[in-house]
Structure formats: structure tokens, C-alpha cells
Length: 153
Length: 153
Length: 116
Length: 116
Ligand SMILES: Nc1ncnc2c1ncn2[C@@H]1O[C@H](COP(=O)(O)OP(=O)(O)O)[C@@H](O)[C@H]1O
Ligand SMILES: Nc1ncnc2c1ncn2[C@@H]1O[C@H](COP(=O)(O)OP(=O)(O)O)[C@@H](O)[C@H]1O
Image (cartoon, rainbow over all chains, first blue to last red; front, side, top):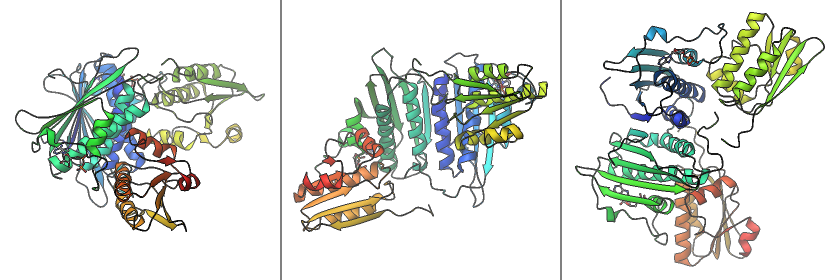
């Protein structure tokens, strides 16, 4: 975990920036050879995770620090992958309390954790050492047909 | 310059990630209320600056550190703006040597610095204290009609 | 935010007691509450079936999905079938991305939605 | 990168000595050298005018622009007029974004390009 990530974004907990991070994640997964759908899933999972940190962790404060670190997994002919580590300095909660809502449960809102867990291969919440939470996401897929690293060349 | 930026990206000097950063910058300028064309200009200028760092600064090494810090400028009814500070740890060059090519000069390639200077209000190259270069870009425009902070939200 | 167009949701009722909701426009954070409200009106105790026709929806973000999941929950509680139809490629992709396509009954068009 | 389609550039010459280049496909980093090569062929010493018809180009990135700037430079050196035509909205936006729309002679279509 102490190795340097290929990419790191630090942002304040302002929902205005969510779209930019989502577009970034789409671009990164494309660069790593993900096909469209799983790439969008990674972007959506990160979006939901950041939204939850802003809403539940920082309780809509706009200036809380959040970091998103991206580690490409070793690539093979049959597999590409990504590990994403999201850290905040917001209030700490019991990781067991962060549960996806059962879809049969009739309350408005909240699909975030459900989507994160359904779409990622691994999604692990932890308390950080000093303060704040850490979420580690992992996703591995078969590479897309066109595995070149550019949007439009 | 010592204040914390709203957003910061750290990346390695791998051109595979250029697209993701460009998409990110489009999203950020949109979040800050930029109309499409000047927003794309900011994204393009950052793209060209990073390309130059990878090509000339790190001479195509893929693991050189680069940071991009984004500071929104104070917003008024008639103006939105952004300041972007890009730093590397690559070789230092005389800022005066980084010149946009005269468009009448017949050599292939290189439009980067020309585009950066033409599209930005300010583009200042400096040597950093210890090593590497710093480029500060500033762009101010009249806000777009639809100044909300989401892509499709 | 001044020029956001509010979501329009057309509600129609068939003689057999099917209620069809036909929202038109993108459904995101700002539009989802309108859809939620329309869903609550559709499950009014008399509906025998609720159809949500998404053919007028070019794009939907997670808040829109959440409103549909809520509709599904009410449908299960009240034992009134819920059927979605008219999904564009982009909207279908959103369901797939969120891995929610298998929890809904999704058919091609309103005709099929009446007979499923 | 296995499935990249190479850029095709159609070259035609009129009796009056106008050489028209008509590339088809997106022009990015990988395609720009092909356009550059075609540009060099067009300014062959006999051309009295060079027209680049971009109507078959849905999108162009900076390397494509750079190839066109190089064409402009050769045009100035050789004193052979260069005219661009057939720019789609997206391609025109790229010129505008790069603030290069004013340095080129840009007309609507190949007909206009012959008489400008
Ligand atoms: N980053 C977080 N910090 C604290 N609590 C969280 C965090 N993320 C999720 N939670 C908890 O998990 C629950 C489920 O989240 P989610 O599925 O996104 O639904 P919603 O946000 O609408 O409640 C939240 O209600 C909250 O209690
Ligand atoms: N980050 C940088 N570090 C060192 N030299 C640079 C940097 N950016 C630009 N330059 C210098 O400025 C020149 C012009 O750059 P540019 O306009 O992008 O054209 P090109 O990259 O094709 O040469 C380069 O050739 C290089 O000498």
C-alpha cells in the first residue's frame, strides 16, 4: 500500500467535482484496456463512494479532503485490472454499518453501497489509523478489443 | 501559492493518461461555469503542457512525477476563472527557450506552446526551486448560460 | 440552474386498471423527485399494474434508478406488477452498469407491457 | 492498436492544376503522418492550388492540426494557395479551440475552394 500510485486525485468534498472525477475514471479505465461497461461500472462505483463520503462522512461540508489513488493491476493477455483506494478524514463508522440496502426494503434513495458491492470484485471499508475511512475497490476484467491507450488518437 | 487547491492530480509521465486528464479538465471547467469552447481550450492547453513535459522534460520516460493543481478564481456575475499550476521534476530549461513556434516556420510537429499561449490569458514558465519546471496557467471568461455544476445530474 | 427544464410525467389509466407513467427528459438528481411523486400517485390502491414507459428518457443517472427501485419496492409490497418498457440503448446501459437489469421486468414496448 | 484503420487520403488533380486531398476518418496522432505525407505529395512543384477537403473527417486532434499548419507553411514558402473546405461542426470547433481558424482560408465546399 506504500508504493506510489500511477494516478492520484485530491479533491475537496464538493459535489460539483463529481462529474469531472467520473469522466476521469472513464478515461483511466479506457487507458488500462477496460471495455466500456466495466469501465463505466468503475466510474459509477467511485462516484457513489465519493457521494457517500460527501453526504454521510462530511455531512455536506464542502471542504473536506478526499483522496483517490489508482493502481493498475499487472496486465495479462486475458486480464486487465484496477485497484482504487479512497481515503477521507471524515467521521469514522463501523465498516459493518456500511451496508447496501436490500432492494426489497421500501425506503427512498440509497443505492450507492448496493451498486458498489454488486459492480466491484472487492469493496472493503476500513477505519484509517488516525481518522477517517478508507475504501479499497478492485475490479478485474477481460480486456476490451481495442486496447490502445487513447480516447481519439 | 501555498493555499490548498480545490483539486490536485498527481500522475506519472505516461501519455496513456492524457485523455483521462483532458476529460477531467473539461468536467472541472464545466463545474466552474465555463462555456464549452473556453473549457475545451483549458483542457487542450493542459493536454499540450503535459505532452511537452513527457516529451521534452522527461524525454519519454514513463514514470516521472507530474502534478496538476487547480484553483478556482473568485466567481462574479460576469466572470468565472481558473488558475492551474503544473509542476514536474524533469530537467530544467530556460523559460525563455520555451517559445511557441512561429506559424510561418516550416518544421513538422509542434503547435503546443503556440496553442497554450494563444488560448490562455496567462501562461508563465518558471524553474522550480530544487528541480523541475512550473507552468502557471490562468483563464477568465464570461460564465456560460447554464451555470450548474453537473454533467447530467 | 436557472434554465433547468422540470421533468414532465404523463400519467394515463386503461380501463383494465393499468396505470402508465411516461416521463420525458433526462432523469437526474433534480428530476428524480418528480418521478418518485408520480410513482406514488400511480400506486394509488386501485392500480392493477403499473407500466413505466421510458421511451421519452434519453438518459438516466443513479437518482432516476433509485426512484425506479423504490417503485419496485412498492410494487412488491402492494403486489401490483411493475413493468418497464421503451428503454433506449443508453438507458439500458445504465441498468446494466448498475447491475439492476435483472431485478426489473423489462419489455420492449407498451403493448408488451400490458400482456406480460 | 491492432484494429486501427489507416487513414485513407484520396488525391485528385484538376486540369487547372488544383490538387485536392480528401482524407477520410478521424485524424489523430496515428493518422497525422499519412496526411503529412499526402500534403508533401500535393505540393509537388506543379500544383497551382491545394485544397484539403475535410468533409470525410469527423474529428481531428492536435496532430492533425499540426499537419495542416505544416501545409500552410509549405503553401507560404512555395506561394501556392491552400484552401480548406468541408469542415464539420466538430472539426471547426477544434480550429476555434486552438485559435487557428483565422490563419487558414476556410470555405464551405470544394466548389468555393476552387474559386476563392
Ligand atoms: N463514507 C461513508 N461514511 C459513513 N457512512 C456511510 C458511508 N457510506 C455509506 N455509509 C452508510 O451506508 C448507508 C448506505 O449508503 P447508500 O447505499 O449509498 O444509501 P444512502 O446514501 O442513500 O443512504 C448510508 O445510509 C450510511 O449510513
Ligand atoms: N516542459 C518542457 N520542458 C522542456 N522544454 C519544453 C517544454 N515545453 C516546451 N519545451 C520546448 O519548447 C519547444 C516548443 O514546444 P511545442 O510548441 O509543444 O512544439 P514541439 O513539442 O513539437 O517541439 C519544444 O521543442 C521544447 O524545446
